[in-house]
Image (tube, rainbow, N blue to C red; front, side, top):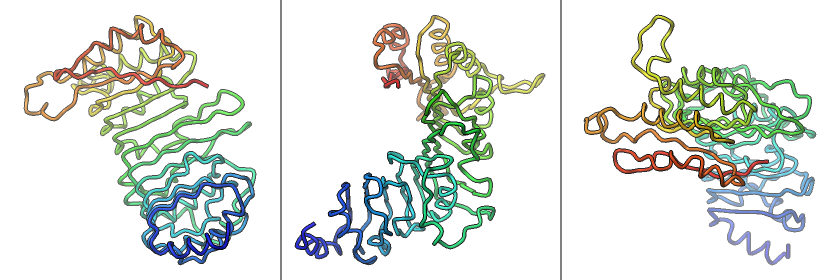
Length: 362
């Protein structure tokens, strides 16, 4: 970068509130990354993408003293978040979901304990990475067995990158970490080399399920009985999105939808019940690889069963009808025709009750 541009940047830096850096050129990065820590006092939002592996191996200090900084998006290689000197305790929004490389679980366990005011987090994780973060050793020692509360964390999205020969992973939220405000958890698994699925106990402690309002599980091995057991613990859940391309998905979906349609399915043997499993559930999204008559019937029955019995009642006012989202292979237009009977279903206010999302299939 020409010295005159660096001078111009330094003249503007005290007033910059949003900064987006996307380059792999060392000649551009070096003058910026070498700026002193107090160079951006007004900075509120930082997006940093430097994806050429090893283009910058030194500590990045330019953003370390930015008292207004709240939102950070990082995509750096190697994926060493502590290479960037940031005021982590004041960050409210952290996005590393679209990074080329994931961060390892040990680094994540340390990082999340610095994010004391985090509201929304989006990250890619792996059990291990090829190169450990050399900058985390310079941090104050963190005892991960100490109880800690993140009082503001409301949304957590995790994409887990599986490595060959991995036999399982610890929970992404430590049992010693309290997240009382967490209401939205979205998890997906990136499969490498073969068809692998994590089990639920590897993704989320069961104690958190009861407080969630929305839950996404993509490429998670549960089966219909396992998924129903999960929903028995989600007494506040309003929206579920589940995507599993197992070979028995059609049969499993029928069993699952039928269980959600029956009041009392949540009761213990011999115990009467008048409630549904996940009684607050108002929307469910499912992957549909093929449509059969039995699955079509189960979808329609679920919508009808979960509709309010008296749309004119005071309790119904402000409540939306139960809705279904069907995720279809975008290369299978024939499936649109197959689900046509569901697409004409309407709620009490004339709104559609079945939506369609076309997705790519790897």
